[in-house]
Amino acid sequence: MNQSLLYQANLISINRVEDNDGNFSDILEHSYNIPQIRLRDLLSGISYNDINKLWEVSYIASKISKSHYVVILEDSTILCTCMFIVNQGMICRHQFKVRKSNISYFAYSCTLV
Image 1 (cartoon, rainbow, N blue to C red):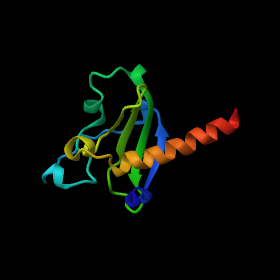
Image 2 (image 1 turned 30 degrees about the vertical axis):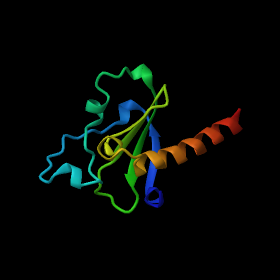
Image 3 (image 1 turned 60 degrees about the horizontal axis):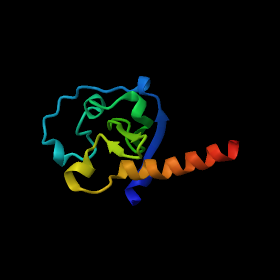
């Protein structure tokens, strides 16, 4: 949870995604800051109509780290390109950051009504 403070989350549209192919020379599972899957591969088989929100999460302290993408589906499923929940069975720091940001975003949206 503490590590989620080192990340910033920005709500984006699917058109703003910069999904690179990335040539990885190391074992991906050992590199937590490298996305484990491309967003387009993560979303294959999922209709864009099923996507509620898309967040770009990036590490604040480094300009060279690659952004992760967190997707919130209409059924409240949360997916992340780090695949930590699949590999380790726990929510990742990116998802935790988005959950905190999403609550803030929701509270801000309600005050506008």
